[in-house]
Image (tube, rainbow, N blue to C red):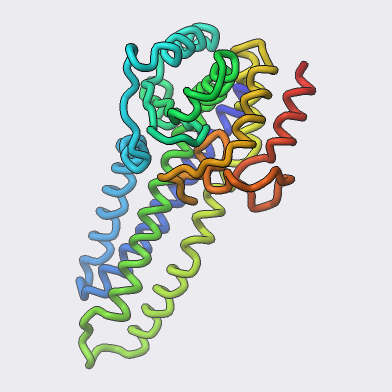
Length: 296
């Protein structure tokens, strides 16, 4: 597990570096589109640093806002708070994640944050209302495992950075096609910029999927097995996964940009169980249950 944590930190650094390079190039072309001349590269670097800094320090707040999550209270969510208190002790974590709740009937949960000290676990009201104590414990343990394994930083940064890249690509493309340009400027240069903008616009969704898949479905298997180390009760998580898989509700705030963060895919909640495909953000429930059964 410690080797996986180390690899995850390295992967996070690589993805952040890749993002800085890509966002700098995109920003440079946008600055060129506005005829900023020799200042283009300076503005591009500044934009890249600012967006990277924002993604690192505010990604969790952005994600919670997108999901319309509210802070959990001890009075309203006492069972949830008690479960997390016990799991923090069994996990050996020094810091307790903050708890948030989404008012939604779908059974789901996710974790986010920069590190275990600044982490968040968010669950839906549907999860709280429909799972018994040990099932809820299994789900919270799974999310706590993502915190301990340092999956949360990589997941949050990918979500925000990819979204920013798509927006910048869209701005660049609109600028090329609709922005005011000097008609006496080099037409070949304009054509090249328009082609680059179109390519970036087309590749952005593909880039987004590749970044999410870079998180690796193996992280879900690892979080499941780590959760069992915390609870010593595979049956609780297995039962919870079955309920989550059979849930027919659609998460109101679900979107493809954040779907990889949840314990089960919220976008495909109404679909029947499927075997894991090469483009899946999650392993199939059947595969996860089989792996948990083998741990008994």
